[in-house]
Length: 421
Image (cartoon, rainbow, N blue to C red):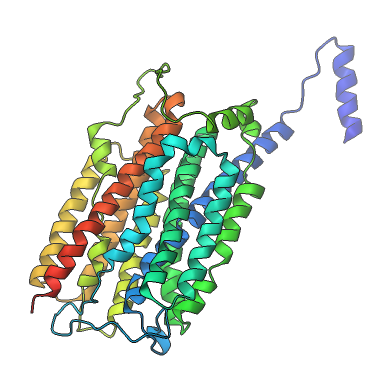
């Protein structure tokens, strides 16, 4: 092969022409880098959100906090069970699963609010390392917990891991081709599906929640491997990109001067986009959708709700290449209608079967995932290069505010409904 190359070179020299480099090797290198980054960001999305989803799936078990055998074993084998309100048709825990949701989201909100003030001073690698350590710590702490309070501390660690990782990796997408955003979004959707499905499947198979959580310790290791070993340097995509990435990671996210915008781009989100991201999540009230005319226990019903919601999220977050939705405000409106319908069912109980709720929750997941991926895709298309890193990080705040609001509203709603006969 070297002889052939030499023959071509001598032929070119004899004809007085400049040597033309063969295009195949650079093309292969570029394609290899593309797929490494695509797979890398998909795995980062998967691993980053995995512990967050698992804690939501385990919420009912954490608050039930009792040991039973087989499929209904709970996180802690020791203390006596928290009494349920058996007179209520909702089979309520004394504490709403919204408490777990808040422990799983409020630390993330704090991180995202404080990120523009000083997170830029810390390079990407230490942030990723801290995120991985917190994720592993959350699984260990909840698995060996002997109280609800300790379990909630483990949930807080999962929230820190997810929040720090999301801000970091979404900001990092600014230094790679825009296509990685869809791969990241698909990975976060995959985390929802695989996290909820693995927790449901392993507990249904007979493992205790403690064993299930400890079996997931490989996920934080995969997160670190994906970042440090799989992703290519921005330099491979854009000469000088590595220096730009390093300098940008140390620059304030909020600047006093306004760089030039690309034609047709915008430095701020439209009102519709802000409303789409700032949407109220309804999963905080899933535990109140309880059906007694089924073979599934209350804990199993809750796990199925989480799995179906995350399945819908995964499908729609992976659909960007097939379907791009520009008017994302319509998705938020449909979600509000879904919320009203299910709240009416909680109050009046008119749905005859749990399978109707299964379909509605799957549909809700499709709406939520589509709103997420299309909002970030629209930002990537319409925001200037100078503003994109900040816009990605700042938009995460609205999403987290919506989830936090749903948890805060669900706490008094839970207590009110559980006091009904």
